[in-house]
Image (cartoon, rainbow, N blue to C red):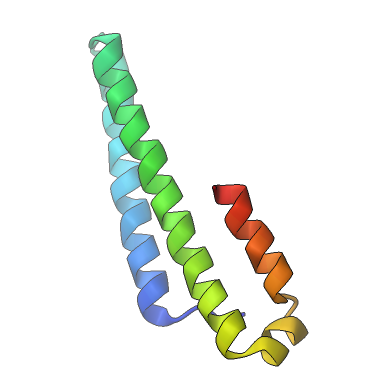
Length: 89
């Protein structure tokens, strides 16, 4: 299944932002910052990764509903994409 270019661009932008957040967490640890501050940032990263995954799965679900035969032929029948969604939930 080929994802729409705008979805790919959005997810890539999110991933670059997440990479910056992870680097910030590494700096916080190196600087000996408070545990609660580090955990707060880790929680933000975790949620950001989840949102990026949901963005991808939402595009897949949209594709599967709009093009069920093509999606199945591409190896993405609706139950497979539903399972991907449930893995993120």
